[in-house]
Length: 507
Picture 1 (cartoon, one colour):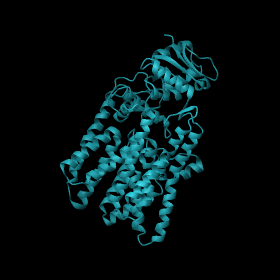
Picture 2 (spheres, helix red, strand yellow):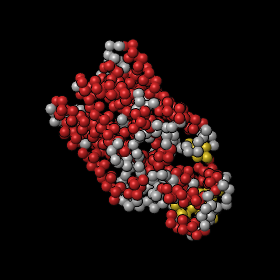
Picture 3 (cartoon, one colour):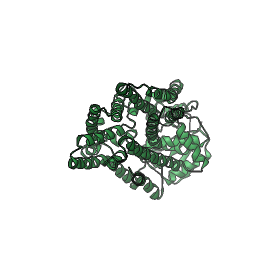
Picture 4 (spheres, helix red, strand yellow):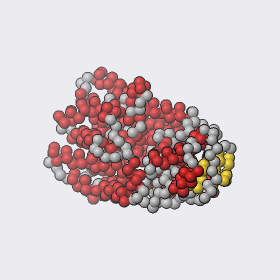
C-alpha cells in the first residue's frame, strides 16, 4: 500500500473512532465528561489505577475494595500513565485518551505493515482489506436488529482492531506489539533481533499480559510449520527469546495467587468464552472465507498463510480450554481470520474479477456495520448525557472537595454508580464499586443496596459500618432514588453543594 493511502486512512479511522469522544467533551454543558464510552465500568477502573500512579505509587491495590492489602507491581502501564499525567499536569481522562490515540495510530501503522508483509505492496485489494481490518466486525448487527441481543463483536474489544482502538490504550498497544513481535521474529537470527524480541515480550507482559500467549502461539506455529515444511529448526531459538515475557506473566500469576486479597479478586474475575454460535456470528462472514483461505494455503503450501491458519485454530482451541480467563485468548483473532479470508477470495476467484469485486464490496459493507452501530450508540449516549459516562456538576464539585479534604484511603459508602466513579477521581475507597475489583462483590453490593433501601436495623448498620470501616456517606439524587425518599442519613453533615451531601459517620 502506498504511504499516502496508509496515512490518509489512518487519519480517517482515528477521526471515526474519536468522533464521539470529541463530541462528549464539546457538549459537556453542566456535566463533566468522563472521557469513557466503551464499557465505562472497566474504563473507570483503569482511571482508578492511573490515580494510584498520580498519587506517586508504583504498587497496585484494588481501588474498589475497602481493605485491599499490600500494594504489588501489577498494572504498571496504567500506573505509569498516572505518573505521566501528574508530571504534565493533565487530567487523567485526557492522559488516558492521549495514550489511546497514540496506541491506536501505532496499531494502524502495524496493520498496514503486516498487510504489506503478507501480500506485498502490489496486492490489488489491499486497501479494502485494510478497511476491513481497521473498521471490521462480525454479523452481530443483524442479531441485534432482530433480537436486541449483543453478540461478541459488540463488546469483546481485544478481539478486533477497531474495538481495541475505540476502547482502551492497552488493547490497541498490545495488538500493535504482537504484530511488531511477529515481524521481529522473521528477521535474521542475530543477537540484536533476539534482544528486541525479548524486550517486546516483556513489554507485552506488562501492558497486555495475554498478548505474550498470543505472540508465543504465533511464533510457536511458525516454528512448527518451519520444521514440518522446511525441516528447519532455527525458529526454536525465537521461542526461547520470548521466555522473558512468559516468566513475567508467570510471576504476575504468582503474585496474585500468593496475595490474600488479590487471590479472592482473581476467583471472581471470570471472562468466559462466547458460546460457539456467538463466536461464529461475531467473526462472520470472514470466518467462512478464512476456511477457504486456510484450505487453499494448505494445498499450495503457502507458508505465511498456513501459519495464520495455525494462529486462528490455536486461538480458538485455547479460548475453549477450561480456564477462568478464556476470552482473553481471543486477543487479535480477527486479524488472522480477516487476512485468511482475503487470501481465500484472492485464490478462489483469481480468474473471476467481476464476482471477486462484488464479493469484496459485500464483505466490506457487512463487516463495518457492527462498528458503525457502536459509534452510533455511543453518540446517542453522549447526546443523552448518559449517567454512566457523565458526572453532574454538583457531584463533581463534591468529589473534588472530598479529594482535597478527606484523609487518604478513607472508606466511603455510596451507591454503586458513585462507588464506581470515586476511586477514579480521588484517593478514597468504597464499599462497593466494581463487580470484579470489589472483593466479595456480590455480598458487598447486596449490603450497599440493603442500606439504601432502608432494610437494615440500627444494629446491622453498626456492624456494617464497622466491618467495612466506613467513615463517610455520599448522598446525591442517585442515592435518594435508591432510598425512595427515605431519610437514611447517618452522621454529621460536612459538605453540601446543591442536592449533594457528604456525611461523616459517628464512631
